[in-house]
Length: 163
Image 1: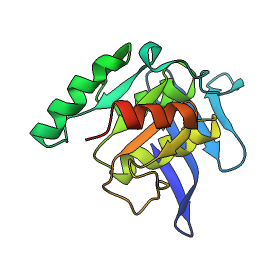
Image 2 (image 1 turned 45 degrees about the horizontal axis):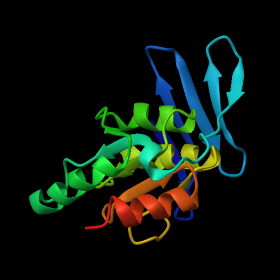
Image 3 (image 1 turned 180 degrees about the vertical axis):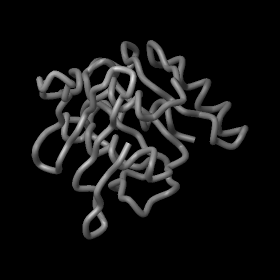
């Protein structure tokens, strides 16, 4: 994963998969793209929003305080499936490719999230920290929630990820 930051915001990002020998890439305002080693490209798009009870996504809960983790883990029964691959690069790729409805991270290290968040947003996702503010490269706390659209983000934030 690599990103370019200019004037305090992420303007480009790439996530390379060495096993598949392909990468997803985005430049702010230019969409998100899957680029294959044969030179072919495919524009990426998040999937359509669905009701909360049908959502499938990633919830990285390991960095919550114990009591907060209990609350969130209990709330996750409100979605259809929540898992974690413990590999943000792979999780962002499958989300931007339209295979998940949400991603949630508590710990915000720039090398894990800058490229992926830009790629997801360029694929049509809505992304914000838990307080509703925009995620920026300087942020290392405050959680991060990405969803297929703002309405889905609001439902997830209110019914699943509220502590």
